[in-house]
Image 1 (cartoon, rainbow, N blue to C red):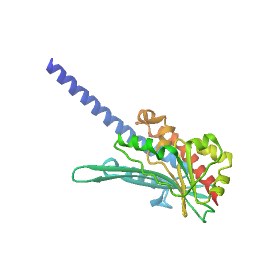
Image 2 (tube, rainbow, N blue to C red):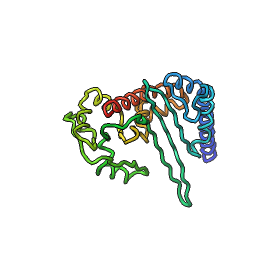
Image 3 (spheres, one colour):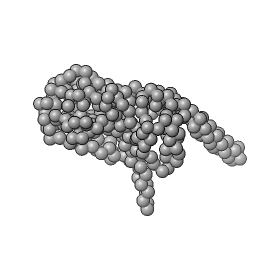
Image 4 (cartoon, one colour):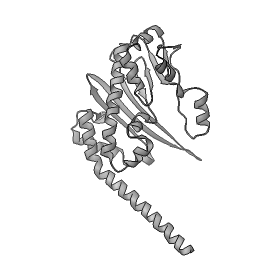
Length: 256
């Protein structure tokens, strides 16, 4: 009986290893075509290769991800969205100490401001601060760092919006007026998670856990089910990139 159990365990291990290798190889073969379609449809290009042909960007992307899971990575892409530059920066860092290893992730979409904003604004999920956040993090190994940037709290008078978001500004009346545009509030409500800040020099949409992209792929289960189909994964993220770019451009117009 023990011998049968041992062979069964070894067989399962071999099956798992074989499937893992198959998944990796299939994904590797599909990545170039998936990347090409993504670049063509979004207009994104790697910031490090400005002016280089598309094929160079595709090859560079493959190089970036070699060993990324163990070494970390930083992916910086730029697109022109109706005349404004949108930067997408994804970063994964690994810090190894004497007794432990610490990892951190960040994902931001950024619009550098070509001219100063009339006022500054911060819009964030209420779940990013408060007692419930502290309790949740106390029972997990992760921490989401978030800070209030501006002194005045803003109410829009929209029950659905005010129930979900904390809004802060250095000029609350101007901020309330800007958020009075229904189309802007609706665009923000359509996002899976909002953490958006208008700084003096840029507008930043932060999503370190990539909740917006993951939601578009059907959550964590959906994302895992597409592990061997990077083309489908990238295709599903394109509307998210477009929507976030539209949010940033609209906020820029409101604050300009």
